[in-house]
Length: 425
View 1 (cartoon, rainbow, N blue to C red):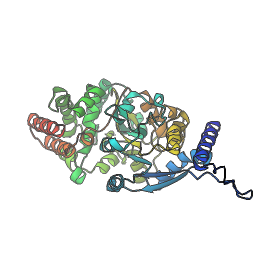
View 2: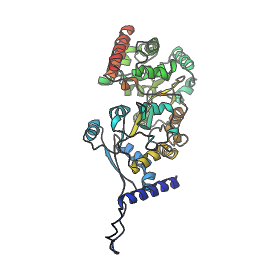
View 3: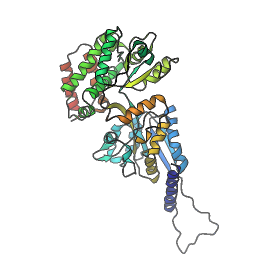
View 4: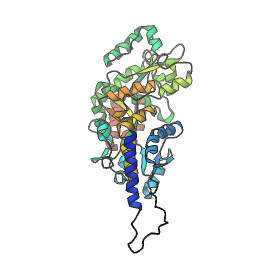
C-alpha cells in the first residue's frame, strides 16, 4: 500500500512541477543564484455532513493518503444542503462532497464521472453502482453504508427460554407463534416519532417485502414499475398488521404501536424483566441500548440477527461526488475505491463500507456481523419513502399509522399508489 501511495505522490509532484515551472526564454537566462521553483501544494476542498466522532473516523481513513501524497484536505462540515446548493450555483463547488444519492441527480451536469477519475469499479457490486449511475454516467462512489434489515434480541433471554435464532422466514414465523404459545410477547413495535410517526413501520414493511418478494420488487416500487397497491405490497402490510395490531404479538397492541416512542420500543426488549422478545430496528439500536443499560454486554445481553429470509438488505448510504478532476481528486478517488481504501474504512469502524476490500477488516464485533451480512447480500435497497420524491415518504408514514389505527387497507394503498404515480411523473 505504501508503495502505491508513494508512486501516486511522485506522479503528482512531477506533473505539478511540470505545470508550474515554465522555461525561461533563451535570451533571458535565469540568474545563477535564483532558487529552484517548488511545485505548489495540492489541496482538496471537501464538504460533508459528518462532525465529532464521525469526522475523526474520516480523518483516520484519509491519514494514509495524506501522509503518502502530501495533499492538504480543506474540509467543511454542515448539515445544511443549502450551503452545497449555494456553492454549486455560484460556480464555486467543493472539489469533493459526501452527500446523498438525490444530489447525484440534482448536480448531474456539474459532476465528474467516477470511471474517468480512475475509480476501481470492480470493487463494488452492481447493486451499489446502479444507484450512483445517472443517465448512464457513474457519478457517485458509495463510501459508507448502514443496514436496517436486522432484529435485536437478548441472547441470554433466548437461551433461558429455549428460543433459537431463526435462519429462514418460515422459522421466524414459527418462533413468533412459539413465543405467543409460551405467553411471551414477540415484538416491541412502537413507532411514535412526532411528525415522523410511522417510519419504523415503513422500515419493517420494506424488510417484509425483501423476504416475501425480493430486492428487485422494492426497486420496482421505487421506479414506479410496480404500483404501490400491488398484491405484494398488500401481503407485506397484512403480515405487519397481524403483528403490529394484536397485543398477543406486540406490546400494547395497536395503541401501543401508535403511542410508544421508537426508542422506548427498543428499551422494552432489554428491560428487567423484558416486555418483549424482539425489536426490528436499524444498527443505531445497539448504541441506544448501551446508553440506556450500560451494564449490559453486547453479544451476551443484547445482539442482533439479519431478518431471516430477506433476499436483500435495506439501508442507507453516503456517496462521494467530485466536482473537479484535478490530479489530487483523481488520487483520492483511486485511494478510496481501492481495496486498501475499503480495508482502511472498515478498520476505522465508520459504519460499513460497500467496497469489497472491507471484508475481513472490521474490528468492532457488531460491524463484523453487519459487514458479513453486507458482503453476502444479493441486493441493497434504499428506503422507499426516502427515495420516491414529492412527499411520498410523509404520505407513507400517515398511511401506515392510519392502517394500524383501523383504516381500510385497500383504500389506503390505492391513495398511496396515486401519490406514488404523481411523484414519479
